[in-house]
Amino acid sequence: MAEVEPGAAPDVREHAESDPLAALGADKDSSGAGVGDELDTEAPECEPPRTKVDIFVSYRVIPDERKAEALKRLIQTSLKPTPNVFVASVGGVKPANIGLKPQLQKAVTSAGAVVALITPESKEREWLVFEAGAAWGREQVYAPVLLGVEPHELGVTIADNVATKASDREQMDRLIQALGEELGLARRGSFANRYRAFERQLKLIAEPQAEAVDDSDAIDRVFRLRASGEREKAEELLKSLVEQTNDDERKAHLLGLGVVLNHKKDGEIRAGLEKLPDTVKGTSSYNYWLSTTADSEQQKLKFVERMIEVEKNAGKPNAFSIALRGEILIKTGRLAEGVELLTTSLADQTRRRRFLLIEPLIRHGNLGAVARLVALATGPTRGDGVLFRELADVAIEHGWHALAIFAAQRAQGDADNGTSRNNLGRAYAGPDLRSLAYESFKAAAAAGVSVGRVNMANQVLYGAVPSIALEFLRDHQGEFDASDPSYPFQIRCRAEEAVADQRKKASEYRDRGALTLAMLGELAEQAIGKPSITADGLRVVLADGRRYDLQRIQPFPNAWMASGAPASVFVSDADEPRLRGMVADLTGAEDPSWISASEISHEVV
Image 1: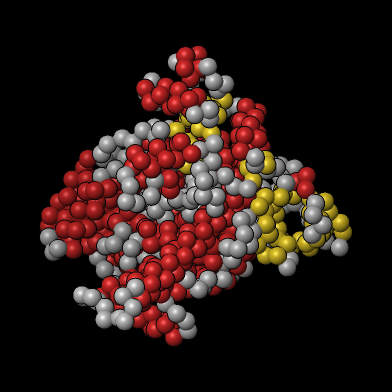
Image 2: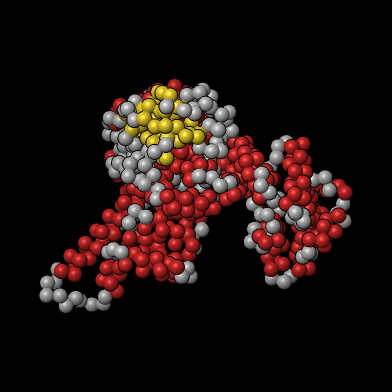
């Protein structure tokens, strides 16, 4: 049983107060979130449609939660129909009137198989031995998966079981095959691609995370002091930060910030920057501050290109600098050049840095809906509400209900405010989940978003809203004077059943949206930064006889969609000129499915 441990800124002066790190052009990848935050590896709060637990994943929550998430995603996307893989901290344990331990006990005893993720941090834990013995007693399949551990390091009770090394693709493939046979599930094709994604996740988890920008708390305090009118204290603190660093790049950040805070006009800021020590004038940060005072986009581009040149000499350009250059190119009419820069640069950045490139790409790139979807699929991570809000907007606009609900829920989780609640209501309204939409619009109105009231009225105007019936009944005090005493309770029961049914449907939409975006994210990884493949004039012929004409998803040279089926996306299979892809009903009616290269043939249109 799972062991539960206790317990980008074009004008810096517009955004500095709310985001001091953005004002510094800081790399927002510095939070160091692990790979569990990567969309294509996590099963984001997602239980598959099957209700019975098929596979129980045993692991140590701290520090192995994200590894368990990656394992869950690999199993889920490798078998069909999608198995219900129980991971306690990833959608497994639910708020309920029964506690944690009973829920875990129920899940593990009902599972068809137990997969134990064993790492150096968990190999000595006594609950592993207990679970191995318990699974044997229940005649369950017990499969240890070793990550950073060798079989000889296991205790006798566990070593008696055939262990699978997570680092061995063939062994993992055999494990998936065995689990499928035990549970009566079919193995999906293209395991090699899914395993490569799994490998990437494990590699990123193992990599040391970037440390936060030095003294970020102190910088934030500078802004708070300025906002409260304590200007002298703010200047003293900033001065002390400058004195404490010997790094010219960091010093340029701080000195430039001081100049911007103490002057309002561009001419004054430029004069102040020119007075800074010569030692910092060759830095990327110094050129950034100069770019914020540029008189024209062309002049701004000159400074940004100097930033990139400095960064190239130091290693490679920062995503922030590339995003600025791409945005300026688009603004100055060099649309194709700007879009190409942003698109090709996606492959060189970690997922947490990509949001800097994606935002100007989808905001100014004039991309089609599916191209925006592919771009967004390369970037969202847990806690990145900006891209999830963008994704929700695109999905709501095009009636992609499953993606809309998943993305809107994620965006609200990142920033629970009136706007995010109203957008969640819009997502629920699409598939006619009126009660949930009404509740979200009501919460938005209570948070000060007046259009929430209009949206509430709209839900009532065009259909029944069972949650309002429940409100009426809950507000009543005392007994009901009905001739039939059971009648009020019958009405309440029907209303509660109707609301519960909508919540169940919303959960199914969310789960399908999560799975769809995860699968699309894996394809998007292959669609970016790769040479163009030739598929013009070809028609995809699937094994079941369906035929789709291919149309390139601009500006991605390696991504194609099937005309007439815009949710069908194809990319080349790894480095070979063979297509593979997915078919997804984005309205949420069906689960997405993979199409392997072996299932595709071609004919000339």
